[in-house]
Amino acid sequence: MKSTTLRLWVGGLLLGPLTSLMAQTAAPSTPPASAAAASAPAYGLGELVNIVLAHNPTLQMARRSREQAEAGIRTAGALPNPRLEFSDGRQRPANGGSSGTVSAWGVSQMIENPWLRNARVDAAEQGLRSSEAQVGMTRSEVVAQVRVRAYELLLRIEEARAAADELTLLEQTRERVRVRVDSGEAARYEIIKAEAEFISARQRQQTAQLAVEQARIRLNQLAAGQLPAGWSLNADLGDTLPPLNPSLLRELMLAHNPELQALRAEQERQQARVREAGASRWPGVELRYTDTREPDNRQNIVGASIQVPLFDQKRGPRDEAQAEQLRARTRLEGREVELQLQLDAAVMALEMARLRVEALGTGAIRDAEAALRVAQAAYRFGERGILDVLDAQRVLRVVRADLLQARFQQQAAVIEIDLLTGRDAAQP
Image 1 (cartoon, rainbow, N blue to C red):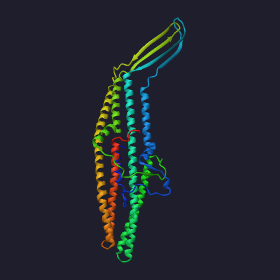
Image 2 (cartoon, one colour):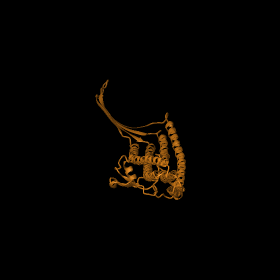
Image 3 (cartoon, rainbow, N blue to C red):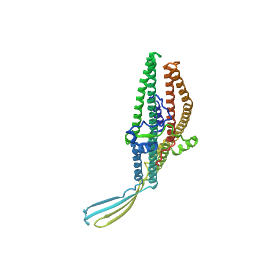
Image 4 (cartoon, one colour):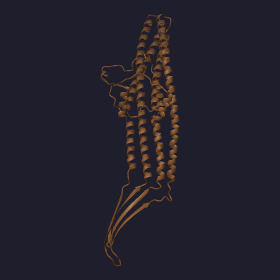
């Protein structure tokens, strides 16, 4: 999963169905306790990440690819085996001479061009570097997915709690309206409106609870179903955010981003392929020794053979390797620019989310709460209708929903920055 895919995926989460929110957003983000859940384990975010890393199948496959690359180095460095020949027969002279057994045996050994062998081994080693970078990239993506889905779970839990509190509040409002309608102090349409709002809130509460369970399932999928039943998450949407230094972040990204490391290793691998193609014109020298025994004599022959690049000078493989090298360098340069732009966008998104949290948490929330108190007081004294109270509740619900979303966006932006800078790529 690359950073672009992560951002699109996070955006999809934010465009999901938003439930109504009436709970205080500063409350701890833990699911409601029950007798069964009391004994269930509560994981911190780091513990949850470790569990997923230990069981995630995508990461396991990436590690198997690294083992395959390690075997490729042994294959590239293997020496050619000697060749042993043996023959036996009889000699029957046509015009006199001795007859008898004729036997021969020989051994040959290919002495490979050391420049060719070194280039091949270098290419395999760069392939291992690329595989290790791919493992780091997969690890970073898995960690990012776990963290995003964990904060999504916290968001859904807050939404479910808020929807439940809203349902309770609307039920109380409905009962007060019913009393006023029954006593003739309010028109009947007010109880109809209150009933409709209560039914709508109950549907939102059920939808929010379903979203919590779906978020749990998505997290468990990352862990290959290894999370126990009834587990809970010990974290909060308002977790402390690290300070940012944009120039330092760019340096970290260029130095530690696993995707860039993989592209650099691929470029080095193609350079080794160019050297290998050039050295393959002279593959090596084959040394031979032959011992032949005849009835009248015995021959011991030592020889050598070498392939002369007269017709095939390996121009095609060299040109192909050079073209691949240029492609690898172009991909590396282009990806560096793209990742720098993505990092700038993530930093900007984080700053915007911080501003939204400050604005909503200090100003808009207080204003909406004050407006609701005024509307409720005015309704009790008969100065306002139920519609004014419901509208004030709706405004407060939307503001609190926006605050939760802004907090989630803060964490998502930090996660993307960590992904781009390769913070979680290295195996601890």
